Length: 65
Image (cartoon, rainbow, N blue to C red):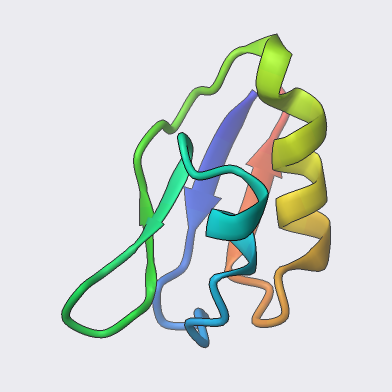
């Protein structure tokens, strides 16, 4: 599994960070998403899928390898 982000779509809600802060962070400058781990392990799959599904700006994409 791989995660792609589109920072232009991000509205800075922080939902992804609240869901999984080892994979996502927010920029101190503009509050938009930062990706800490592009390829999280299977142990984080449920949390990452939840974050992608509930991103209000649809800025996250999950790519299944």
